[in-house]
Image (cartoon, helix red, strand yellow):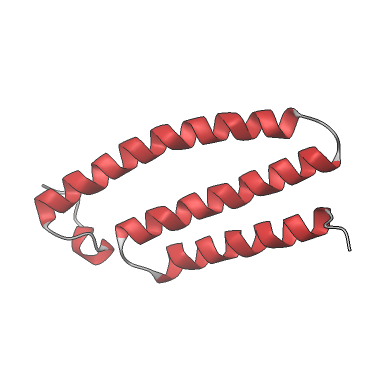
Length: 101
């Protein structure tokens, strides 16, 4: 049995759904952030799968740029989460409803 495009898209959809559930269900900022990254990587998997299926490198080049932007996003996002944790001593969304410092 050969692994086809449908298999990759199913895995991508499952990863995206897992990330979406993590964002919706969890209240910890770090877990929500990891879930968002999981959703981004699911989209990257779908792009690479379509690119490979169509014998076109455009999707893979786009994934390269997405990963580059995601690395910068991680640096800024984690810095903000650490700053909020130091100020409020909590990483839960309920404790951060007021953005006043």
